[in-house]
Structure formats: structure tokens, C-alpha cells
Image (tube, rainbow, N blue to C red):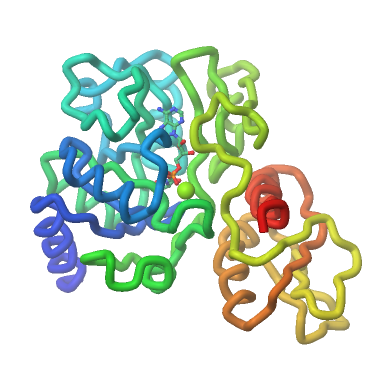
Length: 314
Ligand code: TXA
Ligand code: MG
């Protein structure tokens, strides 16, 4: 307990000096900096090798100071009261007087905001007098990090400090919903869109299509382990790692399991670390069996489809 306290203090020290720090969240680890500081925000883009026109999510502890930065609407309040803190990101209208660095959102009039649930990041946010801009802690287009050691794999000594919060419980990024327009899902994520529809009492639009250009940064090639990956495969090639959703009686050395019994939540939690492990084990190609396209399975399929686009550019 005491060490968590002192680690949080250490993270705050770096952040107060406009340095970037990796932070744990319940979805994936983030690469965080002071969202009010141009210097800190520019560092995030540089470290991540991220194009400056791909905006960042800003993380708050709670709604208290949100009104200084964004216009709050009724749909937001309904969803906030039901799901926050939790794995959902809202696109809201930015206020003119907001102190958010213009580099966070490429001078757009909208802002992505999120209230993470992980107790360590919540405690850190309570100790800061600014919100944190944080993209996922990975080099652009690569696999997200779900453990402190993944962040080290991605960035090595380039990051000043990694605040360790154990393995991310959800394992895939937050669901993004645009609430400026008619509620529209821009990215499938840790929160099922059907739950959102139940709270809003209406259908939401889905614009998660990799070809869709209206969601900046939803680039088709993403979440890649850095080797070719094929999806919906019944029979792998001899030299491929084969990813399956439930354990099989007849197992082989190249079989990797997302869960014991086909549980989709468990599979989402294990997805990125399993792909990372396969690469470390020396495989040059990955085949993945068909994943049921329901609940968080839709998010898994979204990530795998984008990862499979690696084949097209290499
Ligand atoms: O779970 C998560 O959301 C993690 C953790 C660290 O919070 N963060 C995360 O950030 O996934 P990132 O940067 O890897 O993905 C954010 C996505 C990008 O695709 C970006 O284009 C989109 O959010 N985004 C950010 N601001 C936006 C805006 N104003 N309008 C539309 N999309 C936006
Ligand atoms: Mg990301």
C-alpha cells in the first residue's frame, strides 16, 4: 500500500515537470502527460511516433472539473452516471475557454474524454491539478500494452517512469462514442454498445468500419504484433501459431488459447498479451480461428481485422 503511494508521488513529480509517464488503466496502459501543457503533449506524440492530426483522449478523475473544458449534454450525463468510471470515451464539444493544449486534438472543436476505473490512475488523478492526455502506451500501429513490462518492450528507456498497476483487467481499449452528433460509436471497445443503447433508450449509429475516415486515427492498420496475421482460419499452416478461443483435447505446440472455455471477456483480456507472447516465441505468422461476433467479441474481431491488414503493407 505504502509503495503505491510513493509510486504515485514519483509519477506526479515527473508529470508536474512536463515529462511523460506510463499509467495503468483497466483497459490498456496509457502514455500520459499534462493535458494543459503544450510541451508535455508534444512529447507524447514524439515518443509514440504518432501523427499530430490523430487526437488524444483526456482522462479525468470525475465530472467535477469537466465543465471547464467541454459542453456537457443529457446523453453524456445518462451514460456517465451508469458507466463511469469505466471503459467508455465520450466525444464532446470543446469550450472556447478550455485550457486543454491545442495539440491534444489538432485544434478541432471536439474533445475525447474518459474517466478510467483503475484505482491507481484514479488516485494519481486526484493528486493532480490538471487532467491527463494519454493515448495507448504503444508505438503507433502496434499492439497496445496491458502490463508494465509491455510498455518497457515498446519504449525501453525512452519513458521516464512506468507506474505499475498490474495487468489491465479488460485488456482492450475503451468504447468511443460521439455525443456531439446523434450518438455514434466510433470504436468498439470494453463496453458493449447494446448496454449503451439500453441506457439511452435508442439505437446508436455505428461507424467503426476500418474504411471510415470520419473517425480520425481509426486507421485500418493497427494493433499489429508486427508479423502477418490471418483471421477466420480453420486449419493453420505448419509454421503458423494458431490462436483458439477454447482449449482443445488434441493440442499441439503451436496452439495458443485465449481462454479455457471460450469465454469472450477472458479472451479480450488475454488478446494482446497472447499475440505479444507468440511473437516472442519466435513465430513469423499467426492464424486465428473464427471468434463469435457478439458482445466484446465484436471488439476482438475489430482488433484482429485491423491487425490482419499488416499483411497488406509488408
Ligand atoms: O482505453 C482507452 O481508450 C486507452 C486508455 C489509455 O485510456 N486510450 C486509447 O487512446 O486507446 P488511443 O489514443 O490509442 O486511441 C484514441 C482514439 C484514436 O483513434 C483517436 O483518433 C480517437 O480516439 N479520438 C481522440 N480524440 C478524438 C476526437 N476529438 N474525435 C474523434 N476521435 C477522437
Ligand atoms: Mg491506441
